Length: 101
Image (cartoon, rainbow, N blue to C red; front, side, top):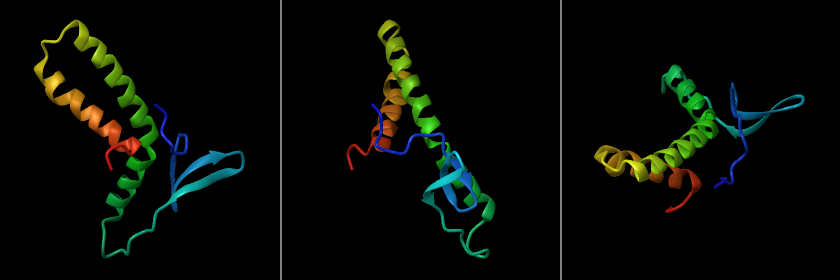
């Protein structure tokens, strides 16, 4: 299922998260830089880079979940996969889609 978000890839630029256009970057999610003494700047940048990776992470998890569900249909003996990994994947995908808010 396609989400209702801006298609990726997203990129982190100094002012936030954006998408490339022909002339530069269109900002889709501005991020306010924290005061120097209030927050670790490296952590802020790492958070922004994680957000920028969201479309690719979502797509990879969606494909992995599909493949793992097919695998479980063939070989259902993996308890961690069926009781932990697949439910976590399904919950994360639903959260990203805004389901269950």
